Length: 527
Image (cartoon, rainbow, N blue to C red; front, side, top):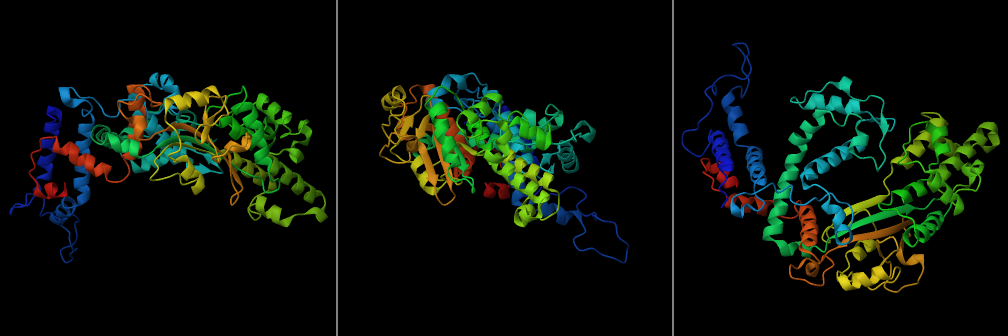
């Protein structure tokens, strides 16, 4: 039984408030329950204009009980991990679960992270995702001051001075993280907001994950979870096969060659194709280094005939996404010079039906390329699948044919390009999903093509989990230490915490282990 004095004192304090309304014959309300809410003239009356109806309405709401239950669970979350010896710790600081690499292959790197940072990393990502939705943007630029104004107007406890926040705007590209998205990232307003509005739900998720890990461990392996990185390159409509040509060159040099790209950020830049000269010409200073090609990457594209040998011809010969926009720009400029070459449909497309000029339209089109996220990554459960990839590809990712045997994996690593199940390892050390059970011995083995969307997919399998791989006494699992098993199992348990009935079952479990003194039968019934 949990015997924390901290929890018991909270329970007594909180339930003293709840006891204002119970199932006794006498309803206990604050002393002003007969007073009117609004002052009106003597000859007027307002229905329900007394605090008694207000108190009864509020206190009978299941939302109040839900919030109360959450408050208790948050206190439990602070002490529930390893509580058997009476010195439990925070369930949200057990293992560092924000490591993006493979637990099976790169656990030592994960071990260097601090589990205490789990909440802040997740909360910061939540804020970044929120502002990337565009609500606080103008002309594709995130205006931090606009977001600060929103916080000031909606959260009374925040001491927001909007003059402290950036008003210039920033283009939010996929690889920008919290400290790059927010110019004033260290402002205490953000930390206070995250602690009060974002982290509580995450703490309860961690508490649920703790329940899953300690009381339903077998269910973790049953999810057949996968940690993946998937990049999707949709072909250019005017140049079919351009994406495939890039992927072939990339696989030769980055997957089976000596170059490295640990998160597909380089491949994303290569396909988007925003050169420094294009960035300077279209919008000087608008595009950061995370999206503009480096000189080395630009040279690689030219070597592989994806960019023309001479940059003078980039606007007509580049086989990248930006190359399509530059080719359209050239057509529109020709139409300006010669009426016979006017393309009204193209003009309308690049001017928002003539709402702005062509130059602005070109810049907006490149903005769209720069901000588009081509990569899907994270942990996914077989029961949910992966919604933004073709169903056949999703099914193959969760195939039971994928091995978790360390000897099989070792053999594939030692012989890059050789498959032993339905995957193979590249020389870059990453495991790639193959598209068919038979092998062609070419790059086509790992390039999945969806004809309906004309999109090519390259899938990295960072972690593959099944019941045998997490078995405590398994000697053949690729997770060959207890630390590796716990690391990946807890990561998956957190994903599971928001699915099915786990959250309800977890709450029942933790409350059943805590000595509560219920003074409100309505709350007891709610529980």
